[in-house]
Image (cartoon, rainbow, N blue to C red; front, side, top):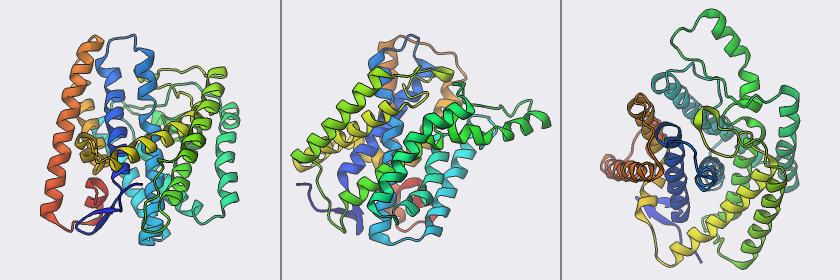
Length: 356
């Protein structure tokens, strides 16, 4: 069994969830370094590993809504505001770090921001209604792709040289980008956040933590992985690499979504088992306590410090560079934790960024 909820200054903490959020950040850093640092070709194992980061990040964001919904009883306006702050943060990264017109290409922060209030509403539905909604979003994805078409290249409009006509055409493309063709369109990625919320409702039946390290969940997760793996193998999709990003979910096919959901459940089994055994990797726990801050910081460094220089190094040098980069981010996360403890109660917007 997972130990009782731990606390820092009286705050609820689910340590295995912290570890998985840290793992998502660790893999995401590796994935985002690929187009700016690694010389092609990208080995398949690295593409497969990179493909786990964003789904895990999105899944856990849905789980956090379930936690707030059960323990803190926040209302819809809370999640609208929190989601709005995350969307605004994504826009600032587009504008100031990437030098792109914001709100166009549906980056992961945009998806998480709009999913928070939608997930809150989802949690008010009955069990069968939730199942219907999730299956509908997944099933609708290929239909929406067929209706709009899928070109495989998310629209990015640099601020330099933007004219009125290009801006207007870009804004006209927003519905297509957010629904089907952006980096993380609503169809089908919203389903992953909703599945995370449903999983959170199961894991936190009140103030307790239900362990996933049991035979029934292991068998169920294995069945999901096998079913998804077979479906993904039979219909892998084009697995495009837009702008050099190597994840295998461009576009996200149904088999991949099923496979990664089962894989995430298995990661919970591993995390719960480690914590129950008293094994807590600090290198994952620290960034897992402030994942949004580390996401923002690593994005700024990649876009403003690394991308301007044409670095293309072999795989061994890439791995060394990644280890150094991630170690630095763990140090930053430790600094954020110490600062958070010294400051005590901080404004709500700050807590969204640095964690609670």
